[in-house]
Length: 470
Image 1 (cartoon, rainbow, N blue to C red):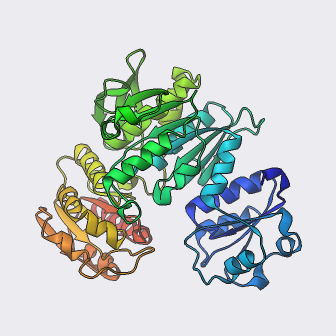
Image 2: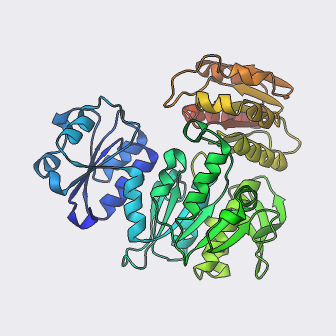
Image 3: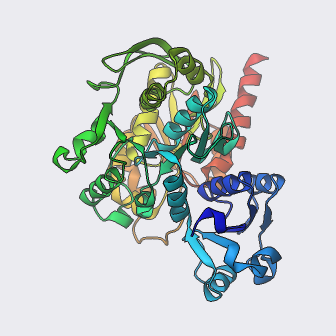
């Protein structure tokens, strides 16, 4: 199947962050786009405004007539999150429609365009967004499929000037979940990290490493690999393909950062790759981990002929991605940061950066664990990383796609947390609990629905700031 034979595209689970980016691309390319999702959201509202036909009723009657009239030119893209008894999914299966998973369609896209794929158990979204922003800001033709909403573009799809297929640079997150990244066709690739995760899929760390090695072997023989220094240590050199590769990291002997300065709302640093140095760069998405993400974005930008001035301008204008070290309040008395971190290493990176930015302030962390299996598998790591806080507030586990596991809950993390104060609070009671708590720096962490609490926490802390000003 090729894109030339398709007229209409229908998405099952169109409201997902990855699915909606793909839907936006098809719409931009001139296809008729429709889709189903279980519930409306701000994201589905935006898709409707952009001209897509959406339904929130899982029935055959809500499928657009254009799809029903011409199955041969219709493509159905579905997510495994769809329930097996879905009326629309089963109808399309029974009637012999062309069904493909999102990862398969991304594979089609990456085989048709020059592709920069960003893999890693964490750091993918910010790194791919930074790469895409630097390229677009410098006027390069780009199409980026992202796993988050960028603040600069208020979208999970970044598009540069429309040009010929041969010149377009596709930037895509290479998701290791369910081994989806093995369907891609990268010309260049980044591996930001290779820490154990998704053990419900892979079983153990060695199998995850094998997955990343399989991904690296997909890189075009004339292409290039950029690999973070700790990830490079995990992957055996003897098993790596014979392609160009470059290591990066804060203390790497290859691409590295020098003279790092943590400020209250930014990080300043010098870029060096052994051949070239760019001094006095400033990144307004704080965090040591974000400096590291910026290093590889800069290296790729330089390899694609961006000038030093274009790098400096693009880096300083990047506003970040929603829920990635997103600062909602930053005053002399109160700070509030929200982050998507849901793995022990991500939490460690986030909180270490917060400590460097606000070393003399009390740090209160609110954490919602994501998945029963992840909480069970990394309980000790969660407790250790959360111990960087002065006070830890735990919410109950967000189950996502999982059923409860007996004996696995948030309370099991409490004993190992070495913070001065630690407690378990029901999500519904959190705002009331915070009303009676003296806070200075507050950080919310998690990949579940903790983001729904962000507006209320922001309003509460802003109100405290106003009262102090009176």
